[in-house]
Length: 378
Ligand code: 3PG
Image 1: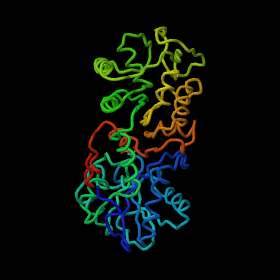
Image 2: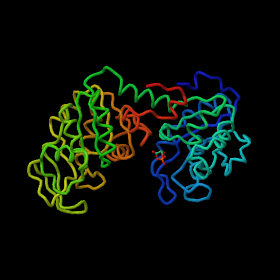
Image 3: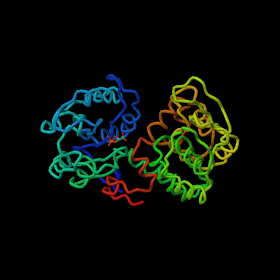
Image 4: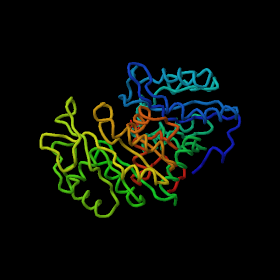
């Protein structure tokens, strides 16, 4: 993969494609991890006396129409605060002139042709500066004009420092010989997660499941899961996976008549009632032992409905056990990072990926177009 260290950027103009798609509610940035993650690349470029234009998408606005809620302007202010440096805001691509040292271009998804990877727009973005640095791991699975398209069209393009770190951590976790490797996959998007699990099962020594995946496996084994979330069409695949891999399912779960119910009870997996749903699972001593003995842990997805107090214990116990383990731990995905933020110190996880969908696709073993465009080969 072409890296920043392979090229000279001294005194050059640089377009830096970041993923500044951070969660915002009523104008307030809820989590600035993605902004923080790109700061080392910006600082490096400053030491090289570069003039930088940051580029990013934000949300999913309709192309061709301005929507103030999807404007990147508040993000420019936050980047300025983090860098202690003025950050100019450029509202239209035609206004890019590299007058200031650092500027941020308005949301690329306002541009017609961004989503379609339009060639003309890709050329405009890719030739905006002397060098196109791609540091948006979180959006590397998208084949769009400011990602794959601009990388192709730029005279010189390379990966930024964040992208390098992401690839290093993800490759270390999926290719290293440090054993045992434990994968933990939970969450509610059962079909996507089952694909992730299929790939991880090829090189994991043990697997712990959570959420809808656990329910699907329990049903595949013939247990009554009541009204629990699961994927009926994937029962056969679940059975096959159970036959092939070392999948650890819980022995006790937390059930309730509904997600909003105040009543709940802990029961064995044999005694879930027809009117109940599994909303959390108990992390048993076998799971704790697997976590404590692992040399590498890959974690994606919560164990239960952790946003609700009644159903948060499984995810909390799991997060604490991973934090206490001496394994190289890799965590990724929006909900996983939120659970880490709520229950433990982020610093106790060896690497937290900034990728959501991109992290999952990497874990599914898929090719990510923007990484391929940069010369990355798995
Ligand atoms: C993400 O949040 O996963 C990335 O920024 C990609 O966003 P998208 O799913 O809207 O393309």
